[in-house]
Image 1 (cartoon, rainbow, N blue to C red):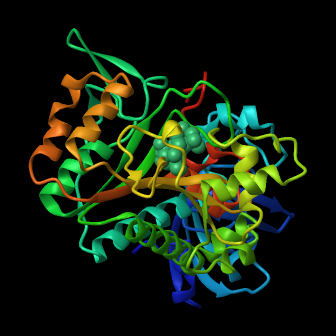
Image 2 (image 1 turned 180 degrees about the vertical axis):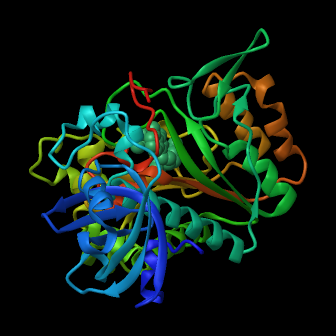
Length: 434
Ligand code: ATP
Ligand code: MG
Protein backbone atom coordinates (compact mmCIF):
# COMPACT_ATOMS: atom_id res chain seq x y z
CA UNK A 1 0.00 0.00 0.00
CA UNK A 2 1.23 3.46 -0.90
CA UNK A 3 2.13 5.91 1.88
CA UNK A 4 -0.04 9.03 2.14
CA UNK A 5 1.46 12.30 3.32
CA UNK A 6 -0.59 13.75 6.15
CA UNK A 7 -1.05 17.02 4.30
CA UNK A 8 -2.76 15.07 1.48
CA UNK A 9 -5.33 13.28 3.66
CA UNK A 10 -8.05 15.50 2.16
CA UNK A 11 -7.74 13.47 -1.05
CA UNK A 12 -8.47 10.23 0.83
CA UNK A 13 -11.69 10.88 2.74
CA UNK A 14 -13.26 7.63 4.05
CA UNK A 15 -10.53 5.52 2.44
CA UNK A 16 -7.95 3.29 4.03
CA UNK A 17 -4.55 5.04 4.31
CA UNK A 18 -1.03 4.23 5.40
CA UNK A 19 0.95 6.97 7.13
CA UNK A 20 4.51 6.95 8.43
CA UNK A 21 5.62 9.39 11.09
CA UNK A 22 6.49 10.10 14.70
CA UNK A 23 4.39 10.53 17.82
CA UNK A 24 4.23 14.24 18.53
CA UNK A 25 1.85 14.08 21.46
CA UNK A 26 -0.72 11.76 22.98
CA UNK A 27 -3.40 11.34 25.59
CA UNK A 28 -5.14 8.19 26.63
CA UNK A 29 -8.13 7.01 28.60
CA UNK A 30 -8.87 3.43 29.51
CA UNK A 31 -10.54 2.60 26.21
CA UNK A 32 -9.33 5.09 23.69
CA UNK A 33 -6.02 6.83 22.84
CA UNK A 34 -5.50 9.95 20.80
CA UNK A 35 -2.10 10.22 19.14
CA UNK A 36 -0.93 13.33 17.34
CA UNK A 37 1.37 12.13 14.56
CA UNK A 38 3.75 14.27 12.56
CA UNK A 39 5.35 13.19 9.31
CA UNK A 40 7.07 16.44 8.33
CA UNK A 41 4.24 17.45 6.03
CA UNK A 42 1.62 18.12 8.75
CA UNK A 43 0.06 16.85 11.96
CA UNK A 44 -2.91 14.52 12.28
CA UNK A 45 -4.84 13.03 15.18
CA UNK A 46 -5.01 9.23 15.20
CA UNK A 47 -7.75 7.60 17.23
CA UNK A 48 -6.98 4.18 18.65
CA UNK A 49 -9.87 2.25 20.17
CA UNK A 50 -9.06 -0.69 22.44
CA UNK A 51 -11.87 -2.83 21.00
CA UNK A 52 -10.42 -2.34 17.48
CA UNK A 53 -6.75 -3.15 18.08
CA UNK A 54 -6.99 -5.60 20.97
CA UNK A 55 -5.94 -5.45 24.63
CA UNK A 56 -2.22 -6.16 24.14
CA UNK A 57 -1.68 -3.71 21.27
CA UNK A 58 -3.62 -1.02 23.07
CA UNK A 59 -1.47 -1.34 26.20
CA UNK A 60 1.68 -0.88 24.11
CA UNK A 61 0.28 2.13 22.32
CA UNK A 62 -0.90 3.80 25.50
CA UNK A 63 2.74 3.89 26.65
CA UNK A 64 4.24 5.33 23.47
CA UNK A 65 6.74 8.11 24.15
CA UNK A 66 7.11 11.34 22.27
CA UNK A 67 8.98 10.94 18.94
CA UNK A 68 8.49 7.18 18.69
CA UNK A 69 8.40 6.30 14.98
CA UNK A 70 5.22 4.53 13.90
CA UNK A 71 3.50 3.19 10.78
CA UNK A 72 -0.26 3.50 10.97
CA UNK A 73 -3.02 1.95 8.92
CA UNK A 74 -6.56 3.27 9.25
CA UNK A 75 -9.49 5.11 7.72
CA UNK A 76 -9.17 8.84 7.01
CA UNK A 77 -12.18 10.78 8.31
CA UNK A 78 -13.08 14.39 7.92
CA UNK A 79 -13.07 15.97 11.40
CA UNK A 80 -13.25 19.76 11.50
CA UNK A 81 -12.44 19.85 15.23
CA UNK A 82 -9.10 18.06 14.73
CA UNK A 83 -5.79 19.60 13.77
CA UNK A 84 -5.70 19.82 9.96
CA UNK A 85 -9.42 18.96 9.68
CA UNK A 86 -8.82 15.18 9.40
CA UNK A 87 -8.51 12.23 11.72
CA UNK A 88 -7.46 8.61 11.26
CA UNK A 89 -9.34 5.73 12.88
CA UNK A 90 -6.48 3.30 13.36
CA UNK A 91 -6.77 -0.40 12.57
CA UNK A 92 -3.07 -1.18 12.99
CA UNK A 93 -0.06 0.56 14.52
CA UNK A 94 3.46 -0.69 13.99
CA UNK A 95 6.19 0.65 16.27
CA UNK A 96 9.30 1.05 14.10
CA UNK A 97 11.84 1.48 16.90
CA UNK A 98 11.88 2.22 20.62
CA UNK A 99 13.50 5.38 21.94
CA UNK A 100 16.46 4.75 24.23
CA UNK A 101 15.36 7.24 26.87
CA UNK A 102 12.89 10.05 27.47
CA UNK A 103 12.79 12.61 24.63
CA UNK A 104 14.56 15.79 25.79
CA UNK A 105 12.29 18.41 24.19
CA UNK A 106 8.91 18.17 25.87
CA UNK A 107 5.82 20.29 25.35
CA UNK A 108 6.85 22.58 28.19
CA UNK A 109 8.67 25.87 27.55
CA UNK A 110 12.41 25.45 27.10
CA UNK A 111 15.14 28.09 27.25
CA UNK A 112 16.57 29.12 23.91
CA UNK A 113 20.08 28.01 24.85
CA UNK A 114 18.84 24.51 25.59
CA UNK A 115 16.95 24.47 22.31
CA UNK A 116 19.99 25.74 20.39
CA UNK A 117 22.16 22.99 21.90
CA UNK A 118 19.51 20.52 20.77
CA UNK A 119 19.01 22.10 17.35
CA UNK A 120 19.10 18.62 15.73
CA UNK A 121 15.91 17.78 17.65
CA UNK A 122 14.45 21.28 17.91
CA UNK A 123 13.92 21.31 14.11
CA UNK A 124 11.22 18.64 14.56
CA UNK A 125 8.85 21.09 16.26
CA UNK A 126 6.00 22.70 14.28
CA UNK A 127 7.40 26.22 14.42
CA UNK A 128 10.81 25.16 13.17
CA UNK A 129 9.44 22.98 10.38
CA UNK A 130 7.20 25.88 9.31
CA UNK A 131 10.26 28.15 9.07
CA UNK A 132 12.24 25.60 7.07
CA UNK A 133 9.33 25.16 4.65
CA UNK A 134 9.00 28.90 4.14
CA UNK A 135 12.73 29.06 3.51
CA UNK A 136 12.36 26.37 0.87
CA UNK A 137 9.46 28.27 -0.72
CA UNK A 138 11.55 31.45 -0.82
CA UNK A 139 14.44 29.62 -2.49
CA UNK A 140 12.10 28.14 -5.11
CA UNK A 141 10.50 31.50 -5.67
CA UNK A 142 13.87 33.15 -6.25
CA UNK A 143 15.05 30.49 -8.68
CA UNK A 144 11.86 30.56 -10.70
CA UNK A 145 11.86 34.38 -10.80
CA UNK A 146 15.30 34.42 -12.39
CA UNK A 147 14.59 31.44 -14.62
CA UNK A 148 11.55 33.21 -16.07
CA UNK A 149 13.60 36.30 -16.83
CA UNK A 150 16.35 34.49 -18.74
CA UNK A 151 19.02 34.70 -16.07
CA UNK A 152 21.63 31.94 -16.15
CA UNK A 153 22.43 30.27 -12.83
CA UNK A 154 26.21 30.27 -12.45
CA UNK A 155 27.81 29.04 -9.24
CA UNK A 156 30.62 31.17 -7.84
CA UNK A 157 33.66 29.61 -6.14
CA UNK A 158 33.72 29.29 -2.36
CA UNK A 159 37.52 29.40 -2.02
CA UNK A 160 38.89 32.78 -3.05
CA UNK A 161 42.34 34.38 -3.15
CA UNK A 162 41.24 37.90 -2.09
CA UNK A 163 38.57 39.83 -0.22
CA UNK A 164 35.82 41.76 -1.96
CA UNK A 165 33.80 43.13 0.96
CA UNK A 166 36.61 44.37 3.21
CA UNK A 167 39.28 42.43 5.03
CA UNK A 168 38.00 42.65 8.61
CA UNK A 169 35.70 39.64 8.53
CA UNK A 170 37.56 37.09 6.43
CA UNK A 171 37.79 33.40 7.23
CA UNK A 172 41.30 32.37 6.31
CA UNK A 173 42.15 28.86 5.19
CA UNK A 174 45.38 27.09 4.29
CA UNK A 175 45.48 26.37 0.56
CA UNK A 176 48.45 24.01 0.40
CA UNK A 177 50.73 26.61 1.92
CA UNK A 178 49.06 29.64 0.35
CA UNK A 179 46.58 31.88 2.11
CA UNK A 180 43.03 31.63 0.84
CA UNK A 181 39.68 32.81 2.13
CA UNK A 182 36.12 31.58 2.25
CA UNK A 183 33.98 33.67 -0.07
CA UNK A 184 32.22 36.72 1.42
CA UNK A 185 30.35 37.29 -1.83
CA UNK A 186 30.36 35.91 -5.36
CA UNK A 187 29.89 39.34 -6.91
CA UNK A 188 33.22 39.86 -8.64
CA UNK A 189 32.89 36.45 -10.31
CA UNK A 190 29.32 37.27 -11.28
CA UNK A 191 30.59 40.38 -13.05
CA UNK A 192 32.83 38.15 -15.17
CA UNK A 193 29.92 35.79 -15.79
CA UNK A 194 27.61 38.67 -16.79
CA UNK A 195 30.09 39.73 -19.49
CA UNK A 196 29.94 36.15 -20.79
CA UNK A 197 26.21 35.43 -20.42
CA UNK A 198 24.43 38.79 -20.11
CA UNK A 199 22.22 38.15 -17.08
CA UNK A 200 23.40 35.80 -14.37
CA UNK A 201 22.88 34.90 -10.76
CA UNK A 202 24.47 32.68 -8.16
CA UNK A 203 22.85 31.28 -5.06
CA UNK A 204 25.06 29.84 -2.39
CA UNK A 205 26.74 30.30 0.96
CA UNK A 206 28.75 33.34 2.01
CA UNK A 207 31.11 33.44 4.97
CA UNK A 208 31.84 36.42 7.15
CA UNK A 209 33.70 36.25 10.43
CA UNK A 210 31.40 38.82 12.03
CA UNK A 211 32.83 39.87 15.37
CA UNK A 212 29.76 41.09 17.15
CA UNK A 213 26.65 39.28 18.30
CA UNK A 214 23.50 40.61 16.67
CA UNK A 215 20.06 39.27 15.80
CA UNK A 216 20.83 39.75 12.09
CA UNK A 217 24.26 38.28 11.51
CA UNK A 218 25.35 34.72 10.94
CA UNK A 219 28.92 33.66 10.16
CA UNK A 220 27.67 31.49 7.32
CA UNK A 221 24.61 32.59 5.38
CA UNK A 222 23.11 32.20 1.93
CA UNK A 223 23.01 34.95 -0.58
CA UNK A 224 21.48 35.21 -4.03
CA UNK A 225 23.52 37.54 -6.20
CA UNK A 226 22.39 38.80 -9.60
CA UNK A 227 24.50 40.67 -12.13
CA UNK A 228 23.31 42.25 -15.37
CA UNK A 229 25.30 43.60 -18.34
CA UNK A 230 24.05 46.67 -20.22
CA UNK A 231 21.95 47.73 -17.27
CA UNK A 232 21.98 50.79 -15.04
CA UNK A 233 20.91 51.84 -11.56
CA UNK A 234 17.14 52.32 -12.09
CA UNK A 235 16.50 49.04 -13.85
CA UNK A 236 18.50 47.23 -11.18
CA UNK A 237 16.16 48.57 -8.50
CA UNK A 238 13.10 47.47 -10.47
CA UNK A 239 14.38 43.91 -10.72
CA UNK A 240 14.98 43.88 -6.96
CA UNK A 241 11.58 45.20 -5.96
CA UNK A 242 9.80 42.82 -8.32
CA UNK A 243 11.84 39.93 -6.93
CA UNK A 244 11.00 40.78 -3.33
CA UNK A 245 7.34 41.37 -4.18
CA UNK A 246 7.17 38.01 -6.00
CA UNK A 247 8.71 36.22 -3.01
CA UNK A 248 6.09 37.74 -0.69
CA UNK A 249 3.21 36.71 -2.98
CA UNK A 250 4.56 33.15 -3.31
CA UNK A 251 4.90 32.81 0.46
CA UNK A 252 1.40 34.23 1.03
CA UNK A 253 -0.10 31.92 -1.59
CA UNK A 254 1.77 28.72 -0.79
CA UNK A 255 2.61 28.90 2.91
CA UNK A 256 -0.58 30.02 4.60
CA UNK A 257 -0.59 27.20 7.16
CA UNK A 258 3.05 27.83 8.02
CA UNK A 259 2.43 31.56 8.53
CA UNK A 260 -0.49 30.71 10.82
CA UNK A 261 1.68 28.26 12.79
CA UNK A 262 4.20 31.08 13.24
CA UNK A 263 1.41 33.51 14.25
CA UNK A 264 2.77 35.89 11.62
CA UNK A 265 0.79 39.11 11.20
CA UNK A 266 -0.15 38.36 7.60
CA UNK A 267 -1.79 41.75 6.99
CA UNK A 268 1.60 43.41 7.31
CA UNK A 269 2.79 41.33 4.34
CA UNK A 270 -0.42 41.77 2.37
CA UNK A 271 -0.28 45.55 2.50
CA UNK A 272 3.11 45.67 0.74
CA UNK A 273 2.81 47.12 -2.75
CA UNK A 274 4.88 48.16 -5.75
CA UNK A 275 6.76 50.36 -6.34
CA UNK A 276 8.71 50.41 -3.08
CA UNK A 277 9.51 53.87 -1.73
CA UNK A 278 12.94 55.31 -2.52
CA UNK A 279 14.88 57.66 -0.29
CA UNK A 280 18.32 59.10 -0.87
CA UNK A 281 20.87 58.65 1.90
CA UNK A 282 20.85 62.43 2.38
CA UNK A 283 17.06 62.46 2.79
CA UNK A 284 17.32 59.60 5.25
CA UNK A 285 19.96 61.49 7.25
CA UNK A 286 17.63 64.49 7.42
CA UNK A 287 14.80 62.33 8.77
CA UNK A 288 17.14 60.95 11.42
CA UNK A 289 18.47 64.37 12.40
CA UNK A 290 14.93 65.74 12.72
CA UNK A 291 13.90 62.88 14.99
CA UNK A 292 13.71 62.98 18.75
CA UNK A 293 15.71 59.78 19.07
CA UNK A 294 19.08 59.30 20.72
CA UNK A 295 20.71 59.11 17.28
CA UNK A 296 19.55 62.56 16.18
CA UNK A 297 23.18 63.79 16.23
CA UNK A 298 23.97 61.45 13.36
CA UNK A 299 26.33 63.12 10.86
CA UNK A 300 26.26 62.94 7.08
CA UNK A 301 28.94 60.43 6.09
CA UNK A 302 28.33 57.91 8.88
CA UNK A 303 26.86 54.49 8.20
CA UNK A 304 23.42 53.56 9.49
CA UNK A 305 23.21 51.01 12.24
CA UNK A 306 20.23 48.88 13.18
CA UNK A 307 18.46 51.64 15.20
CA UNK A 308 18.62 54.15 12.34
CA UNK A 309 17.47 51.57 9.78
CA UNK A 310 14.57 50.58 12.00
CA UNK A 311 13.55 54.19 12.55
CA UNK A 312 13.49 54.87 8.79
CA UNK A 313 11.74 51.62 7.86
CA UNK A 314 9.01 52.25 10.44
CA UNK A 315 7.91 55.25 8.37
CA UNK A 316 6.83 52.92 5.56
CA UNK A 317 4.66 49.82 5.18
CA UNK A 318 6.67 48.47 2.21
CA UNK A 319 10.43 47.87 2.13
CA UNK A 320 12.32 51.08 1.37
CA UNK A 321 15.35 51.67 -0.87
CA UNK A 322 18.01 53.97 0.51
CA UNK A 323 20.27 55.05 -2.35
CA UNK A 324 23.30 57.19 -3.10
CA UNK A 325 25.37 56.50 0.00
CA UNK A 326 28.61 58.39 0.66
CA UNK A 327 31.45 56.96 -1.45
CA UNK A 328 33.59 56.55 1.67
CA UNK A 329 31.39 53.97 3.37
CA UNK A 330 30.78 51.77 0.33
CA UNK A 331 32.83 49.15 -1.49
CA UNK A 332 35.58 50.09 -3.96
CA UNK A 333 33.70 48.91 -7.07
CA UNK A 334 30.65 51.19 -6.69
CA UNK A 335 30.10 53.70 -9.47
CA UNK A 336 30.02 57.37 -8.46
CA UNK A 337 26.88 59.36 -9.21
CA UNK A 338 27.75 61.40 -12.36
CA UNK A 339 25.96 64.42 -10.85
CA UNK A 340 27.69 64.22 -7.45
CA UNK A 341 30.84 62.19 -6.96
CA UNK A 342 30.58 62.29 -3.16
CA UNK A 343 27.94 59.57 -3.42
CA UNK A 344 27.68 56.27 -5.27
CA UNK A 345 24.93 54.70 -7.35
CA UNK A 346 24.29 52.02 -4.76
CA UNK A 347 21.09 51.21 -2.92
CA UNK A 348 20.23 49.06 0.07
CA UNK A 349 16.75 47.68 0.53
CA UNK A 350 15.55 47.94 4.13
CA UNK A 351 12.79 45.57 5.20
CA UNK A 352 9.83 46.83 7.27
CA UNK A 353 9.20 46.07 10.94
CA UNK A 354 12.82 46.54 11.94
CA UNK A 355 14.26 43.60 10.00
CA UNK A 356 17.04 45.72 8.55
CA UNK A 357 18.93 45.54 5.28
CA UNK A 358 17.96 42.60 3.11
CA UNK A 359 19.62 43.70 -0.15
CA UNK A 360 22.78 45.59 -0.98
CA UNK A 361 23.34 46.49 -4.61
CA UNK A 362 24.23 49.06 -7.21
CA UNK A 363 25.97 49.99 -10.39
CA UNK A 364 29.63 48.97 -10.77
CA UNK A 365 32.50 51.06 -12.06
CA UNK A 366 33.04 50.18 -15.73
CA UNK A 367 35.92 52.61 -16.34
CA UNK A 368 39.39 51.05 -16.06
CA UNK A 369 41.27 54.11 -14.76
CA UNK A 370 38.72 54.93 -12.10
CA UNK A 371 38.63 51.33 -10.90
CA UNK A 372 42.44 51.25 -10.75
CA UNK A 373 42.54 54.38 -8.63
CA UNK A 374 39.86 52.98 -6.28
CA UNK A 375 41.84 49.77 -5.81
CA UNK A 376 44.85 51.91 -4.81
CA UNK A 377 42.82 54.14 -2.48
CA UNK A 378 41.43 51.08 -0.73
CA UNK A 379 44.93 49.58 -0.36
CA UNK A 380 43.92 46.44 -2.20
CA UNK A 381 46.60 44.27 -3.84
CA UNK A 382 46.27 45.12 -7.54
CA UNK A 383 47.85 41.85 -8.68
CA UNK A 384 44.94 39.91 -7.14
CA UNK A 385 42.51 41.99 -9.17
CA UNK A 386 44.18 41.84 -12.59
CA UNK A 387 41.57 39.44 -13.89
CA UNK A 388 38.82 41.74 -12.58
CA UNK A 389 40.48 44.72 -14.26
CA UNK A 390 40.50 42.73 -17.52
CA UNK A 391 36.70 42.97 -17.46
CA UNK A 392 37.25 46.75 -17.95
CA UNK A 393 39.99 46.24 -20.53
CA UNK A 394 37.93 44.02 -22.79
CA UNK A 395 34.30 44.69 -23.64
CA UNK A 396 33.54 46.87 -20.65
CA UNK A 397 29.89 47.97 -20.43
CA UNK A 398 27.57 49.55 -17.92
CA UNK A 399 26.52 46.83 -15.46
CA UNK A 400 24.95 46.40 -12.08
CA UNK A 401 23.79 43.84 -9.60
CA UNK A 402 22.69 43.10 -6.06
CA UNK A 403 22.87 40.54 -3.28
CA UNK A 404 19.88 39.46 -1.23
CA UNK A 405 20.44 37.75 2.11
CA UNK A 406 18.27 34.64 2.32
CA UNK A 407 18.19 34.31 6.12
CA UNK A 408 17.31 37.97 6.67
CA UNK A 409 14.44 37.54 4.21
CA UNK A 410 13.27 34.38 5.98
CA UNK A 411 13.44 36.09 9.39
CA UNK A 412 11.35 38.99 8.12
CA UNK A 413 8.67 36.97 6.31
CA UNK A 414 8.38 34.54 9.22
CA UNK A 415 8.34 37.39 11.76
CA UNK A 416 11.21 35.95 13.82
CA UNK A 417 13.04 37.65 16.67
CA UNK A 418 16.39 36.20 15.73
CA UNK A 419 18.10 35.04 12.53
CA UNK A 420 19.36 31.83 14.21
CA UNK A 421 16.06 30.04 13.52
CA UNK A 422 16.16 30.66 9.76
CA UNK A 423 18.72 28.02 8.87
CA UNK A 424 19.14 24.34 9.69
CA UNK A 425 22.31 24.63 11.77
CA UNK A 426 23.23 28.28 12.34
CA UNK A 427 26.87 29.30 12.59
CA UNK A 428 27.18 32.10 15.12
CA UNK A 429 29.87 33.84 17.13
CA UNK A 430 31.40 31.21 19.45
CA UNK A 431 28.80 28.64 18.46
CA UNK A 432 29.06 25.92 15.84
CA UNK A 433 27.65 22.86 17.61
CA UNK A 434 25.62 20.99 16.56
P1 ATP B 1 25.13 44.65 7.27
O1 ATP B 1 25.56 46.08 7.15
O2 ATP B 1 23.72 44.48 7.74
O3 ATP B 1 26.11 43.81 8.03
P2 ATP B 1 26.28 44.32 4.68
O4 ATP B 1 26.17 45.69 4.18
O5 ATP B 1 27.58 43.84 5.20
O6 ATP B 1 25.15 44.04 5.80
P3 ATP B 1 26.14 43.21 2.02
O7 ATP B 1 27.61 43.07 1.90
O8 ATP B 1 25.48 44.30 1.27
O9 ATP B 1 25.75 43.29 3.57
O10 ATP B 1 25.47 41.78 1.71
C1 ATP B 1 24.22 41.64 1.02
C2 ATP B 1 23.16 41.06 1.92
O11 ATP B 1 23.61 39.89 2.59
C3 ATP B 1 22.72 41.97 3.05
O12 ATP B 1 21.78 42.90 2.59
C4 ATP B 1 22.11 40.99 4.03
O13 ATP B 1 20.79 40.66 3.64
C5 ATP B 1 22.97 39.77 3.86
N1 ATP B 1 23.98 39.65 4.92
C6 ATP B 1 25.15 40.32 5.01
N2 ATP B 1 25.86 39.94 6.07
C7 ATP B 1 25.12 38.95 6.67
C8 ATP B 1 25.33 38.11 7.81
N3 ATP B 1 26.44 38.18 8.52
N4 ATP B 1 24.36 37.23 8.13
C9 ATP B 1 23.25 37.12 7.39
N5 ATP B 1 23.00 37.87 6.30
C10 ATP B 1 23.92 38.78 5.92
MG1 MG C 1 25.22 46.49 2.25
